[in-house]
Image 1 (spheres, helix red, strand yellow):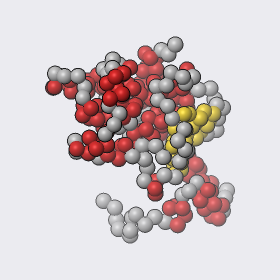
Image 2 (cartoon, helix red, strand yellow):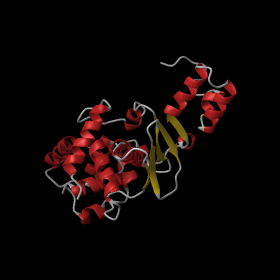
Image 3 (tube, helix red, strand yellow):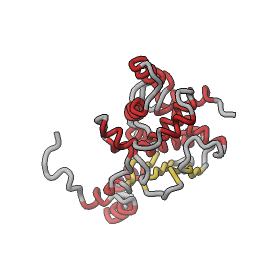
Image 4 (cartoon, one colour):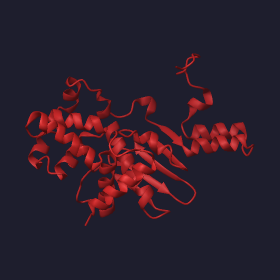
Length: 253
């Protein structure tokens, strides 16, 4: 049986370890890049895989499916952080696209629960829900749920599952709130990128340890410039090898 209190404590501990407080929205992509010896890979992994974690004593890799929505990618990364910090060393895990599926093995359900607490700390979620329900005097509406998921930066499915588990939504209400989310979010004035997958120019990216290690090897004269560029091209970082057009020759403010 999953100990939710223990997982909540673990999520809180890792948030603090990475420099996040107990209530604020977390930029989990930026936080992950502060983890020593972690390479973060964004890559289209098909319809059935949300992410993967490969780790050993020297370094680790977390892969995130960039064909999924940004909100789901954030949840997937938080899920993989559980595997990174709490699975045995030298363990590789490939994770399915399911959230809250009771058919998944216990460790996968633990990782989902950890991810939910990491992105939506209990006190912060309870406070946000209370504020919405006190203001309206009614149960949570679809618009309320969209406001919550925008605040915490999670996918619609992740929010529905969490609210259902917390007793804020019935299974019937949950099933009725599956459609029209993007158009509803747009009408509420929100940026709908949370519900869409990565743009084409960001679907394949390698960040973190691998890139910095290649730089260190070059600066230490351990590899040649040619090998350095080869390593970067293998990591789909042609922007570093050939230069980026984004700066356009102008000083950045």
